[in-house]
Amino acid sequence: MTINSVEGHRPEEIRAVPLRHPGRWVATAVLLVLAAMLVHDIVTNPRFGWGVVGNYFFATPVVDGVEKTLELTFVAMAVGVVLGVLFAVMRLSPNPILSGAAWLYIWFFRGTPVYVQLLFWYVIAVLQPTISLGIPFGPEFVHMSANSIVTPFVAALLGLGLNEGAYYAEIVRAGILSVDHGQFEAAQSLGMRRTPLMRRIVLPQAMRVIVPPTGNETISMLKTTSLAVVVTYPELLYQTENIAARTYETIPLYIMASFWYLLMTTVLTMGQYYVERYYARGTSYALPPTPIQRIRRNLTTLRRVPFSPGGLGGS
Amino acid sequence: MAEPMIRAEAVHKRYGLLEVLKGITLEVAPREVMCLLGPSGSGKSTFLRCINHLEKINSGRLYVDGSLVGYEERGGRLHELREREVCRRRTEIGMVFQRFNLFPHMTAIENVVIAPVLVKKEAKAVATTRARALLDRVGLSSKIDAYPNQLSGGQQQRVAIARALAMQPKLMLFDEPTSALDPELVGEVLDVMRALAEEGMTMIVVTHEIGFAREVGDTLVFIDEGVVVEAGVPREVIANPQHERTKAFLSKVF
Image (cartoon, rainbow over all chains, first blue to last red; front, side, top):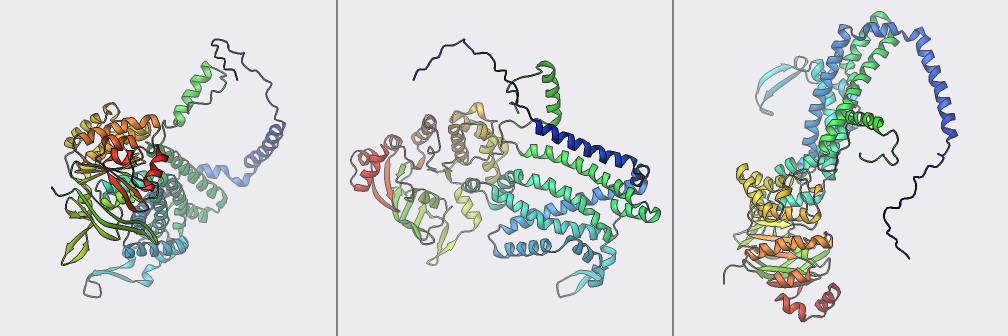
């Protein structure tokens, strides 16, 4: 074997004829035709009622419904996250009563449809006409009618939040289990007790596993709030159906609502990206660029070097 | 003679039906450096983990600085200690792991500061000053704001040593501290440990570094299949092992 380390000589750059991809051109043509047909139908079919979509898009009840949808989404998610962390930590507790209770909660709320849970909260007054505070099985101090406490908002919040708590507990549990066992041991060997160990060492690391499904759950929750129609909470879909019941323009109104949902989930998706970046600290050498950084860099590099072989690196 | 820092009397440890420690009896004096040697699976790491109660022993007695590990003897019976007390005693024992186990979401200095602040309720400024001094001592004053994944294995292990020292322990346990390192990085970690030994820290070191055991260790204990096979002055044990198993092991390690 000869090793020749003569420097300076560099063979000329390879300029081969690129491989042809006829299949790609066929697929592109087929898809373009289908897309053209779809667009043609959407534009020319009067039953889509684009005018109606536009007219109602910023109507007061609709914007009101959007606000209520967002409000319910975030409050119910907050309830779900708090309950989820609580039940996940309970579930992993060495205390069998605590972990058993958490198991039971998750079993029940994950095992029944959220729609049915909402219906139950809506008719809770039938089951429990009054709610009172006092000593268990002893004297009661405060009486309230269930109907005055469990308003449509509270019913929607309880239904969605408790259900979310059960799902979220499993997400958090998976996150905690994903943390290397050595981390627990290192923290224990420094004399940390269970609560600070969880809060300062384990949960921040579990976040990397917890955050992506949290974005997913939030987006899912945003759409699931539409089930709050059954508890007469006036969110987006409720308002949409209200208008449709008056004007019979059902399809354009559902299209309008769908656009609103798409808009909101798009914004949430973008937010999720940045939250994930934050929790990726200390896990990758260099964070990937944000879309804005990427566009800016692409623009500058495009201008300066139109073609650079192997220029895909750096991300 | 003064009270030993560690006294183990017939320590047994089982995992289900598998008996890992079959009666370990030994003593470690204050300021002593004891090196534990033995094939993998011999129980030396398990013994180390029993000392700060990461593992519970099944029989025998284990004392650190005169008090029983994990239990309290009252009225002729052993009572389990509360979590608070177990944790308080762990603060007096530093531990360094084979895989470093630094907290990856914190910078080097945050790794060193967190336990004194969180566990001992030290003022953050005080803990930070000491952390800087400790990181300087292990030769990492230029890396205090680096995250663990930006550090080499040797640097990470030195941060881990500083983290353990930040609690001002009276005893340090090292569980194969250089086994996960590239050969060229072993030296920098051993240097830190040697300096620590010279300052008079009581240390138990599970290691395969025969050279370190010979030069720094006061005693060398060879463990196999959960029992102490041979113990003595490192130089003598290494040069002239008495038992067949020790001979066989040393001939393979060299």
